[in-house]
Length: 173
Image (cartoon, rainbow, N blue to C red):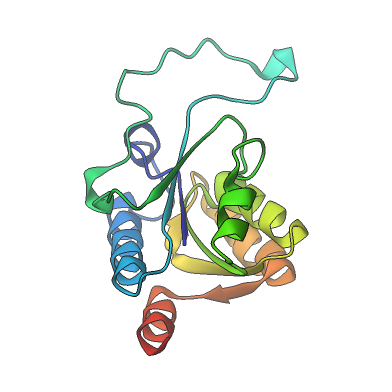
């Protein structure tokens, strides 16, 4: 399970679906995965990719902006990824970590659907993972972008599922 950018600075932004619901479902998924002994990866973002200077803004986040939210109940065995790009695989060692564990399938949730979640899903797909996207455990800053990712992009990358379906499958595994 890979939880994308459920950190204080992101969860505090206005989102299309209530962030509290997304964090609650994501936390329930993380608890279930830990209970079954499945790996949990908690991702935060601490910067952006170099590139177009016209898109850069002076951004001076508060000190706790990258802190993972307490609702995730971070555990010592959780793998933490701090990324500097949209996707969680680029230059983070995440692929090697998962391969060392024998992981072949990833389950994704978090904020923002069309940015961090979609970028990570694309990278996971390209790396050969079976990808499951938990639609009701993610949201975006824009409702149309969320819907576009879920309806148009995600079915090309993997299986779109719900929290209830993933919890049921995790319990049966």
